[in-house]
Amino acid sequence: MIPRHTLTDGYAFSRIIKGGWHLAGDHGAIDPHQARRDMASFVEAGITTFDCADIYTGVELLIGAFRQAYPSLAQRVQVHTKFVPDLSDLRSLDRGYVEGIIDRSLQRLGMECLDLVQFHWWDFTVPRYVETASELDRLRRAGKIAHLGVTNFDTRHLDELVAAGIPIVTHQLQYSLVDARPESAMAEYCRSHAIALLCYGTVCGGFLSERWLGRAEPRLELANRSLIKYKLIIDDFGGWELFQQLLQVLARIATRCGTDIASIASRAILDRPQVAAAIVGATNTAHLRAHAQIGSLRLDEADLAAISAVTERRGGPLGDVYDLERERTGRHGQIMKYELNAAPAE
Image 1 (cartoon, rainbow, N blue to C red):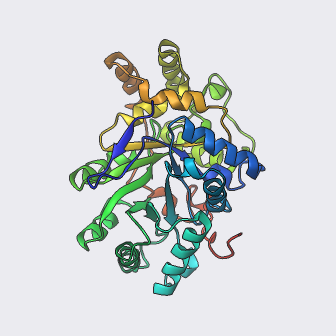
Image 2: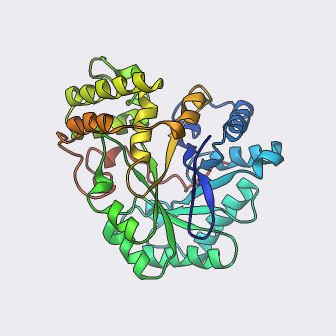
């Protein structure tokens, strides 16, 4: 059984969310027919909520094709997408730009109303994010969007949206045993404003798995941008040796629970205050059985103490949510892609 989270207005979604970034092309070729069949398998297993974005190339279209191919299953699905204007457009975007992107998402997905739109803003020195969020809220009131969220906002700028009366109900952010930045301020802020946390990166792009247990630190070019991104986080956490100690602890817990490291890592985050869901990136159904069991896992006090004995020795990453990634010339910011809405593939 996959547990569900219900917002105050009654909107409910699965606490395990199928992520869509891995279907966007950076993780190998995707067979669209198999991708649709895999989506059906996730829904049948109780993972009924899909995460995607306007900038995840082809993913909204894939979900739309699934909805058309499996209409009965589609009735059970919640789709969470994003509104991510290109960096170069932040100073000039207007009402027509915002509505055009939302209309395109509606068309791609084959929906009359988007369940949840999560708003991202690349550069807070361009002070038009409140105005843009207000345009999204206008579309919510017009019936094109059911709920509004944000993704990768820091606490101060999220508070500006809330103070402006934007009804933010979720925040999608990076949160894992390796990256605890939400605990600095964001988790408590969201608790006090009834904003649910939707967490990506709970398994660090696959680093939190048996595959990396006991392995030497990777020195050569990694296979995809996801691994590059999370290796930087591991470096900030305290390096490969401390990370291996964490893997060893998680492996012992996983053996006791009859599951795997990734499931224990996700369960630990699901148990954190204000966390509503964990987003699992999956290009296929290889780990579906393990994903479906996360909801029934229980970590006891000894498990939590063993994990804390390692994580309390972390060195970072420091700062608020997504602060490091916003430094475009820094280690984290240099790997980001800022112009993915410029020429969207249809």
